[in-house]
Amino acid sequence: PGSLPSMGFAPGVPPEYFNQIVQSAQKNGVPLSEALALFATESGFKNVRNSKSSAGGIGQVTAGTAQQMGYSAADMSAPDQSKNIDASLKYYAAARKQTKGNAIAARDKYHFGLGSSQTDPADETKFANYAAQYKEMGVVLEAQRTNAQGSAASLTGSAIADKEIGTISDA
Image (cartoon, rainbow, N blue to C red):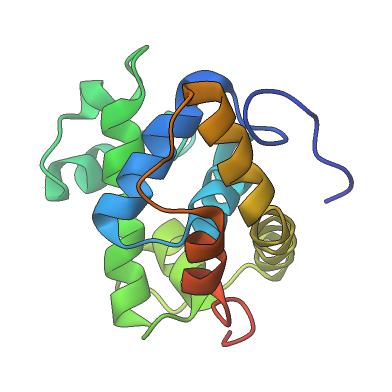
């Protein structure tokens, strides 16, 4: 996808979303690199509405998916994206479980629906590239987050990196 713009705690990640993504990824058992790649691929971390599919927010969540995850459609495009982030990662976690941890297949199921077998090779490549870049930065991301908060986080950078080893290569 080329170089990622630098902003926030990680390249391309607005600071107002970073901690929410980290917390929701931990809560839902999603590797941080995949969580960041998901939002980078779906919306470029922008709270936008796709008029064609009526999906909204940084995770491009539809009304039906929002309801399945316990949220309202209005929550998905609200200025506070915490519910969108959580619904997105809860749904992605279900896709990862269904695909036995295959990140690329999980991303396709996230995008097209858990019952779908559709694929999008261009978006698969984009997702894989983002995930690999974020995975390489795992320790750096955690160091930045720790420094910014002034205290150690619950997962250390090495724990994040260890947790993610093999995730993309298993695809």
